[in-house]
Amino acid sequence: MTRHEQIDIPTIADKDLVLATDLDGTFLGGTDEERRSFYDWIEENRSRVGLIFVTGRDPGFITHLTRKQGVPRPDYVIGDVGTTIAAFDDSNHVSPIDELEAEIAEKWGDANRKVESALHRVSGLKLQSAAFRYRVSYDMDPSRFDPVAYDIVAEMGLDSLVSADCYFDVLPKDVSKGPSLLRLLEHLGIDNRKCLVAGDTMNDHSMLAMGVPAVAVGNSEAALLEALDGHDHVHLAKEHGVAGIAEAILRFEFLAAS
View 1 (cartoon, helix red, strand yellow):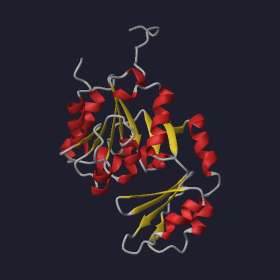
View 2 (cartoon, rainbow, N blue to C red; view 1 turned 90 degrees about the horizontal axis):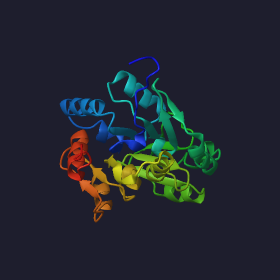
View 3 (cartoon, rainbow, N blue to C red; view 1 turned 180 degrees about the vertical axis):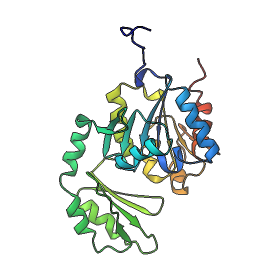
View 4 (cartoon, helix red, strand yellow; view 1 turned 135 degrees about the horizontal axis):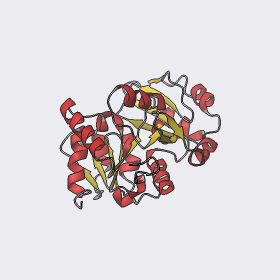
């Protein structure tokens, strides 16, 4: 190949499968051998498989994960429980897409300190030390949690979300993983039918329930499985973590035609 020749690299919209997956318990779930095998498969099929992380984790965690932990680099990231919408560049940096985040920023305003002040004395909540741009997150003790927190958040015009029975997130109104993922898919021109969404906790519910082919992996929390009852587009996997994702890829026959 001469220096004037170019390799025709398909855009993510042209790929046969776009995997939009939660991290903890899902893409990071399963045995060491299962993860290694699945990650190798991703890398070997980059021309056909696109990858979007849809997670509650922050950009710094994702950068460390792909640089130091041997996890495949995503093409795009929905982070911070849907409040970050970003590209992921070749240097493993999360680069927010301003036109997609503008509405999120406007809905949130400068609510961090107001939320922290309003929930300061609510029992069962411990403020997480990490600083987020458009969310406030707490570790929750369900045995001590006071449900008045829901009312306080609602009165502020914001949304609250409990997941894994131990996390309490305060988010901009109508912003979560599902709506943010749909906006990114539309922005990128991705056919929803070529997307597989994967998750395991209630903060994945909004994306699993939005009608796109989806999988709740075998280690999903009971509350999520109950909430997804009757959703025919969702595969309830038997296998855990990445093995559950692989099970769904076969179930939906995404790559059957080669």
